[in-house]
Amino acid sequence: MSFGDQSRKLSATTLLSKGLTPGKLRGLQRISNPDGTLTILALDQNNSVVDMAAKALKTAGEDRQPTYEEVVEIKLDLMRSLAPVVSGVLIDPYYGAWSAVASEAIPPHKGLLVRLEKSAYNKSKLGAPLAAVEPGWGVEKIKLMGADAVKLLAQFEPTEPHSAEANLALVEQVYEECKRHDVLLLLEAVAFPFGGEAKTDASFLDRKAETVIETARQLSRFCDVYKAEFPGTLDRESDDQLENNLQALDAVSERPWVLLSAGVDYAAYLVQVEMALRAGAAGILGGRAFWKEYFLQPDGPSRTEFAVTTGRQRIAEVDALVRSLGTPWFGRYGLTRDDLNTVRAVEGWHYRYPRLAGGSPALPSSHGPAARSVLIGVD
Image 1 (cartoon, helix red, strand yellow):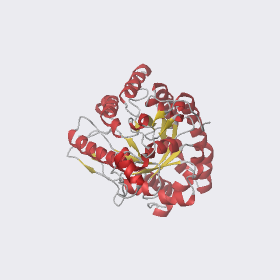
Image 2 (cartoon, one colour):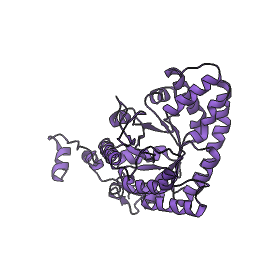
Image 3 (spheres, one colour):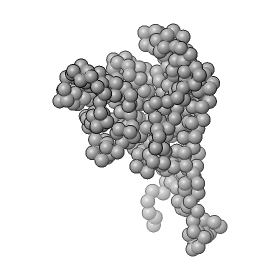
């Protein structure tokens, strides 16, 4: 007589060798659709939300900045309206995270991703951004509050070495902290103009695709999910060139990757999403493309109505593409759902944890048979 399934099992080392430790694996499960694809809503923007709210107030005859409380309510309204149709929500700590959890604006069964970096940043001598962590915040706090993933934005330009080296150092530091706390890291990398350029200048647009691809080559190993820009510009490059760019991005990405929206109009984002998914993306992490017109509505009820109708419809349309065309996150690791179902850990693994996750070992007591079995291998 025997109990359970006696078929062949995969050792947990199958996952550990790929960096898929218990906390990171659980994080991936929590922020994903059931099929392993990702449809994540971005509401971690601070400066852009404040700016859009200020313009809406001015249109209504109030020439002022929104209050802290008003920005909190904006984000909660968007969360309540849109979170039900996504696999996870990315929120900032300053305005959103605690209020979102307490109010259940992000439903408990949805993935929770929390931003790490601060909005305002210093710049190099050439005007390149230097990433930094939000004051008073950190990886450990994100883990302590029960979030499923840490998100870090590192603007990156391989040809501007001063900011590139500084931002790479921060990325590596945060990646090691996330390993120590065994929490998922989602890394966002975006290109930027510098040396007096504007985002509309030909010099910036000419190198953008190469920057996006080379940045993924250098940074995607230092995370668990990589959030990438679209490598090129619609209507500026041919579809064939854009498809080649996306294939190149997919080839150098060492982790599952998702496409950000960068504030483009929804129609353009929908085109980008389908192209990215066909090239190998695991899904999307989009924000303003879904909800930026929220601020153009005349009053509170109209804004909520826009979010629950147009905003939700947009996400549903993108989600259908993600689920039909996206590459499940485990596919990037050469695994199938059936493989994951057969993974088993060996007895005593909990004594070696979190060392097996890259953190400091939790040493057992020096007394008792449990400690002896770990230290000398007998029971």
